[in-house]
Image (cartoon, rainbow, N blue to C red; front, side, top):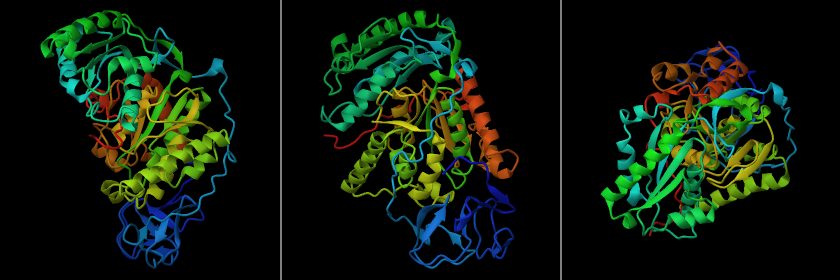
Length: 514
């Protein structure tokens, strides 16, 4: 599915492909209303963003949207009827992965002509979009101490260091009572290491309890991280308790603040941007407006030498064959399918199924099956070659469009991508997510005008203009890319203005807590 702006927005409905047997209601439709473009009568009220059959669909036959299968009819559906979870459901079907058959080599912008932003160049050459001091906890047991240290540096205290965005503690709910060689510990360790060396942090303090599974020194040694003037650690049991550790932590942070306050922004190429792509609280417009528009922005970023990370493996399920066709090699495509197979086994072992999403809110917004949601979600990744596939929170080293294995749960997914190196997040939403996550700014992209107008406190861009007919997908994508550059340069997103982001660090937990 391409991120095309050629939507057939005629009167009341949106046709996405000539071979589809459903169209999407652009506005709420009422029974007996005629849809002249489709030559059908609406047989029952249909909410905006939901689907209407344009031809009779027999029981067991495929429901098609985006010229792809999004589900199967559970009973006979007449032309003009509302198509949703009451008469259509998820069903598995064979998919041709066709590794690399549709890969397109990127038409890069010449280096001298590439877009730029104002970023923080760190001593190791990596570039940040923000200038924070971070306090990480190795285990939930040290969360409170980390928080007490950060609380010392309130808005009044930070007036002494005007060039620093803040001191942020990132608590979490794990770190112990798990296998040392298990997947949860691996995810946590990679997440902590990724944040510890993230370029949006000018300095980091890691606080541990002392007896937990997630030992700080072992973690740093495993990833060849050395303690320094910008990377410190404290262990509560070795410092003599809470008060002593808080006092020592404040002293360490103050020393890092002096150096961090000297950091200044400089002109950096857009190739230094790595953008996390997320969708949450989705609706029937997500795959029509915000996601394809973000895909346009991603293509522009990649052409400028930058990187974009698509994630949420359960939410590309049913669309993975579109990504494997874009894989730069068969090996890369097979890495993606290996993660799909892991998820199939993982959900089966936990008495779940891959169609457990859309959520109730997604369904109310018009999404019927995970197949439909996935096809829309994949549009965020644009059209360029899939360069590599990464484990959760693994450091992203390839440039261009890549994929990271994460769950669909938004905070956990974004935590993994930020740990992987994302220094900015673009988040599409149809129902109205208010996500923000320090130390990385989050740009919110609304899929529809009604929600955008209702939630202007939180939505940075209205992509609903595409179905309103007042802007094209390309124009909206260009607007998103421009906001990416401006936000990376220091303009605050709305979530930042609200101070959101201290509680969203959420490493992915897998398996037993013992």
